[in-house]
Image (tube, rainbow, N blue to C red; front, side, top):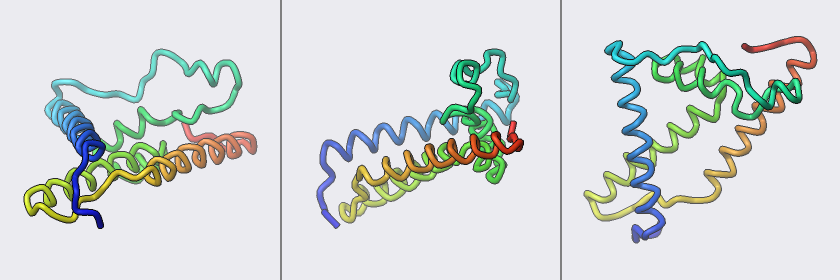
Amino acid sequence: MEERFDNNDRFFYILSLCILGAFFVMAILQHTDVFKLTYNVEYPCGFRLVTGFYCPGCGASHSLTSLIDLHMIDSFLYNPFVPYVLLCVLLFVVTNTIALIRKKNYLHFRMLYVFIGLGILLGQWIIKNILMLVGITYS
């Protein structure tokens, strides 16, 4: 493993800290009843209105809300991309925070992580639409 923490890694480390911070703020607000995320969506998905099919992002709001409420399985079933991203962000922040303190063994950002995420996003989209075609809906 490379020992150097370059500008690209620094950018993704700061971005990951921001994402993780936003998630924890939403979780705190949700659990203290200051602000409640709900499953009710007032505006329908434009993609679904036009095509009749789920979009790749369908279920992301439900997934995020379930994740905040610590319902991990529900979150994964609604849209597995959301918990995947949070897991990657958490691992990246924790690993690199430890590495910055110890000054070695940094976890570097790799495009492979993006491709895995895109594979998860597209895979769940295809599966949900196939299930819808055979009469099984998830929402």
